[in-house]
Image (cartoon, rainbow, N blue to C red; front, side, top):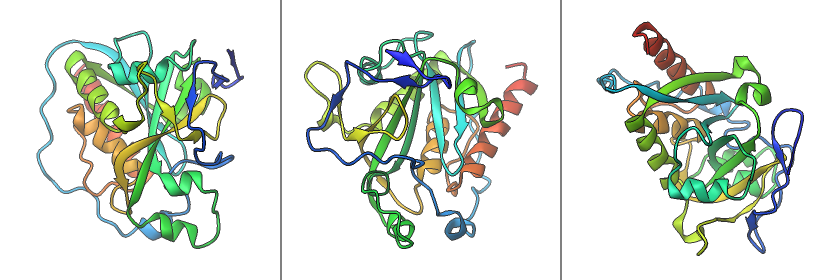
Length: 248
């Protein structure tokens, strides 16, 4: 197992792949590409009450990663116990220290269609996919410090977040040994696509999913109205600033 200069894992002897899964989406960014102009008019979240601070000490930090049109959630591997389903993902990448998970439109990610009409078709409801990227370094090393927002979580928040991430995987693709059959290779070294039961649409994008994951952890975030990466990152930064103001 080798790591590239940016910390992405290259190769995985333990990875399971679908025998006839989708084609490699080389050079693509998962979800959301080419949609910004179509989505700028959608509303931001309303003024519903945010959850109160979660009691208890912070046990570990996650990261929200801005990848342009797309956002991901990064978990430390080894710092806290992983949900069994997430541990099954990690088993395919010995040496992984950071698990980066994101959501996107399965057709856009896998079919390779980059025609002018492809972004329009991607806005229609369709099957989703999870992109796992395995890192052997912190996310700041792979994506740049300016693209990463750190959020410290309590044990309860970490458990709830992991439950959400595990629920984003299609259980029908889980193998008897606890690992996962993949849809296809991902666009980066050490990345792979997995099936998701969640439907992707113009109203529930990769960035809605990111905000939903943070809200599921009971961070002060609303997913309603979030469709763009800058919206998801704004919520993440607001949550980080609030935690910092309270002394975490």
